[in-house]
Length: 542
Ligand code: ZN
Image 1 (cartoon, helix red, strand yellow):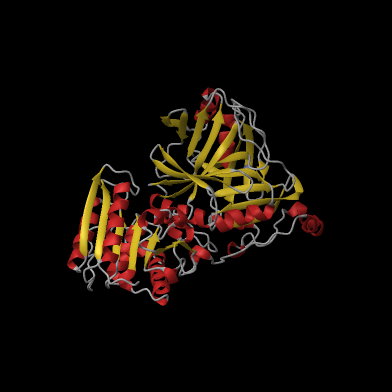
Image 2 (cartoon, protein in one colour; image 1 turned 90 degrees about the horizontal axis):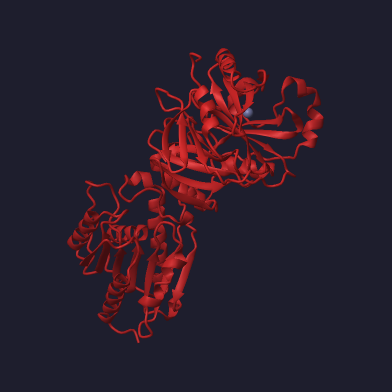
């Protein structure tokens, strides 16, 4: 076996349709760098796009042939069905929020092996996974991306191939130094042995004897390329592989040198060298900004530039979630009576994933004919008030947390402007919204009509000082929570109740062993009781 191993994927090449949609998705949604704008060397009238990390490192490169008129492909046996990127374990919430804000439908899948993952389709229908795992490693964060470096895509995690049976593919993978390291259901995982975690070193085969054959087209993976350390190693590996399969001669791909061979299951494999890399024909600072052509096509540049569809590369544009005040203009949903006819206001703050109209359905249970209330529910930008757990360092949830608190203040101000005093405003929320409501009351202390925290508590890391100065002057506060709860530890709820009691709140604390993470009928009844009692105790406004 050659001295230098194949350590994982070098690049993945897929078929796209609309070039601009492809460019926008990978740079503006996934935050990758556009590292090369060139043409398909075998069909120079069409583009070849390369995306990757800031310097176009091997193991980060996803490339596309955008063919505007190609039909959609359908994934099937003998194909790569999913391409997975690696993200840090702590970044899953950030990506959920970002994809939601970008209106990308995604699925959060049950744990696979030891990883959390999000699955979604790109504009051409290609199935992409973001895999959050502990060994995600360092990153050359793309310089024009608005994804914070700590959450940036690291490069490939791996790929999933679908096969009717795996024996022969497993054999050729073994020839290449990849051995089965794990198995879960009908998913087999192969990896090359390596000292440190390598990018793209998870080659999964899902075995389904009844799988139909796929149809190539937009969204299909064209081939996957593995990494050869250098030209010499590539030739050694070629000698090894050609004992089992036919392979091409070495081809000059300008940015790397390649051999190709089709594995027995039907997927086209490539072995590509790390060198010379993407800075060979343009400066690192301006990768992707102009059309790069290999020397033998340079003479045809004017004709090619005219023929290729015009595209615009957007760099570093801040919008929505990137603003310093992301929730400032988030939408406000209303239910109940209009503010000018209300004797009181209930501000309802939804949990992560929202939407506001879901929590607003509680208005029917909380109001009554004898108590005309206005219900106001702001909807968080990206459906989450802050990206990380409420137990994380507060800095990790900024600027979202401060923006969310400011948004609650602006809704309070709206009620105040309508002539409804704080003593007639109830702050209520579920889960993340309950944490936000509690945090708002503690950091803006005054006599409110009440606080309803369904499964939530004060925000901050365990062991930190959560106390706040100020006087709540008898504000009724309900803490009702499941115990245990997957997101909100019961001791934090107890601690929050204690702190608010010390601030002068009139606290009711209820735990429900084994209750699901939702608002139960009994918790709604407790809230209804709190609200009616709070308004009974006040002088009539009739
Ligand atoms: Zn390739």
